[in-house]
Figure 1 (cartoon, rainbow, N blue to C red):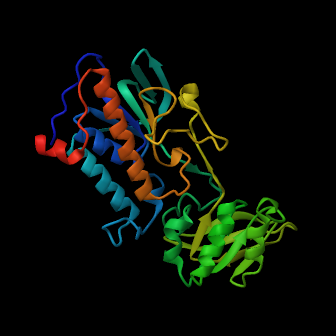
Figure 2: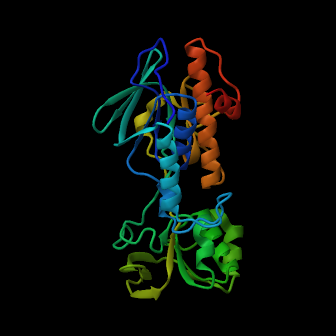
Length: 328
């Protein structure tokens, strides 16, 4: 295990605090620790959306692995280099001089730099069966999980662009798709909706509301109510919830700039508008929400934080990781 001496000058509990325990945050923790930065990860849980994915087949070097297993490997790797973890919810963030204070649900922690990597939170349907069957047929990422449902019966729920895209993707995999939306159409996405309407593998259930998701160990069906109040249960193997996402970032305040989707705006080096504060992964305006992309962004954010701290304490930064490893 790498030793982690505190940097000179500015006295803080940690060199770096990372908020978020999924691909971006765990990778940032690994890279920060390898730069001998004392590192704390504040997170409610480990894995994020990846942990809801029963099988990941597109992570380089690993042909197939469960999402939970991959995220556990990420965490163990970070821990082996000295990362510390507290399972708490971040409630507030402030900067006084050069010191950041992260206030969690339990206590305050101080650091020289902070990396925001808490990702996006999928909007739930908030119906019976949804929480119980997450990772057991209920999924929030068609890009991740669609190949697992080739030739199967699935439901896609939502009024978003992603819902239409997911339906078309699943249809290309020979899945039989029921697309459920509580409105009469998709006026914002007319061209894509026309493609859906013309696809014989997709059955539309418009002006319909999901009442519950059926199943015990696995999803077996979805119960839907039509506009006239009639109900029926559709037999499906999986439910793709494409209801949009939200960013729970009010606690960050005005230390960062947001775009129109409320994502945190960063530079190519993952810097926010506040020096020493970085963001990585799905909480930033990444087009593609993938584990490998979030991991790379987490690594970049950690290296940026390292350079910032080295400059703060008047020490040279080591440029490349392999050279750093040789010098240990």
